[in-house]
Image 1: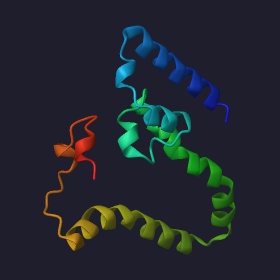
Image 2 (image 1 turned 135 degrees about the vertical axis):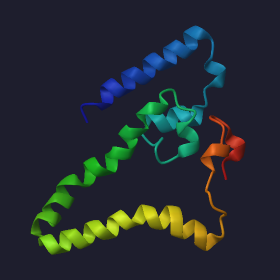
Image 3 (image 1 turned 120 degrees about the vertical axis):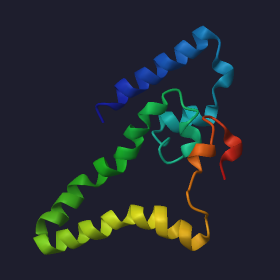
Image 4 (image 1 turned 90 degrees about the vertical axis):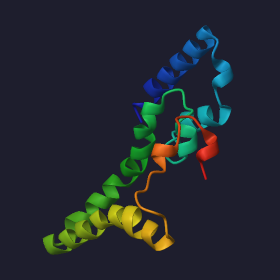
Length: 126
């Protein structure tokens, strides 16, 4: 919670810089709103148009901050074998999402969506 005021101040400074340089026309209000509400990591099309696209990490870590105490309490009650199985299952999720799911859906390999997506181009978002 203590980082949010500094974050909003930095967004305000970036906004003032855009205003000073005359580039406010390129600003998307939806991207600004998602950034101020720390939702830009969950809306990738808005993250590319944010005033500070590098701050997506703050919005991605909020669920961790919210769930940390509960997760810690649950995990401390589990045995090591159970935690190992849980970690193995969780570490397989990226592989399933990036390899198995595209193969199942018939997406041709190599998966080069991002290579074909120019920065700040909404027309390649699906």
